[in-house]
Image (cartoon, rainbow, N blue to C red; front, side, top):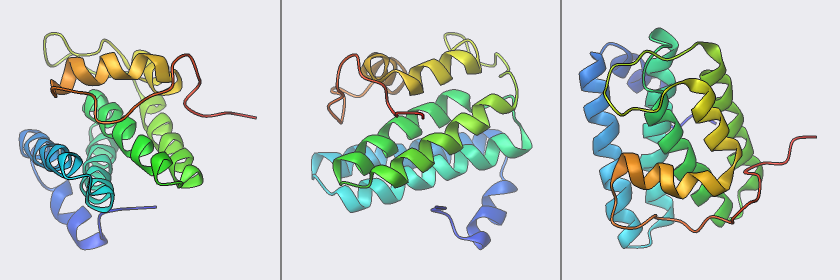
Length: 156
């Protein structure tokens, strides 16, 4: 499932990394606003856009935006699961994992998650997600409730 249409994907692929980061943050801030209104459809839409943008940015710069991808994947998968869309959530998680496994990240910002393996671990262990989400997005509360000590996805 893709959230951005081909036209917008092409347009956003030509943005600088700073512009992509700003757009990603804009969408995540909108998700926070919609979360306050309990508008699941809009949360999925803007978080899906942020997720697609992070995947798109990593396609051309696989050493960057691993934290943004992880954060948007956490929120997107959680809201999809809360809406009963478990298969779609698993597909989005697999897309995130594939992107993170592509290469090792660069160390652009101080305090950023150290490497893709850490982000992969966080995506696969739901008990680590609330702290990671709070640390990097600095939202007053975690927008979704996570089960403790349960895997984010069952892999057979």
